[in-house]
Length: 178
Image (cartoon, rainbow, N blue to C red; front, side, top):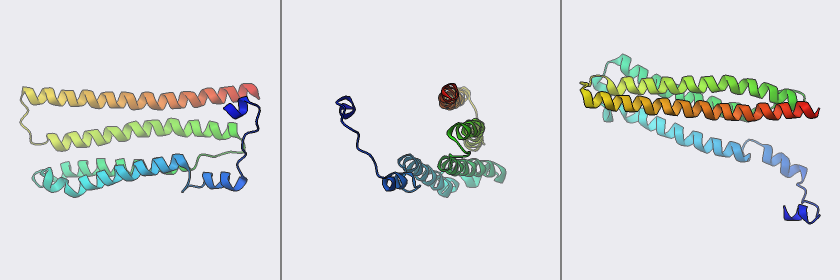
């Protein structure tokens, strides 16, 4: 900022350096997404490996185990699909067309994200609540967990809506300038 303010020309990046920054392995945003993806997938895979013995999966019916496994596997699949979607952002001949398509895909992805989280939460609730004697204390605890899950869903929905709203405003501004 000081260089610009003082009227000094900004340092220009070479085309090769810019091209390198945009490759998948060195793109800074994709690196962060990849790290988060690997961390979450590792945690889910560890849970899948140990749930049968640590969380008494052997005492639950196969359908309850199946719901739990499907919930975790679809969460892993959703994370992978999110990474793949994040690395293919350009669809179209120009910025406005590409941005329009991206907004449509983000709206779809938002609802898939919410559905994925619901499936994961329901699977975990079914698994951990199966066979429990529900007294008043446990019912209150489950109610609290459901409220926390609902809060997470609301937060996730609002985050997606903010991101999509910013892009829609950007698109409007670009169309107004044109």
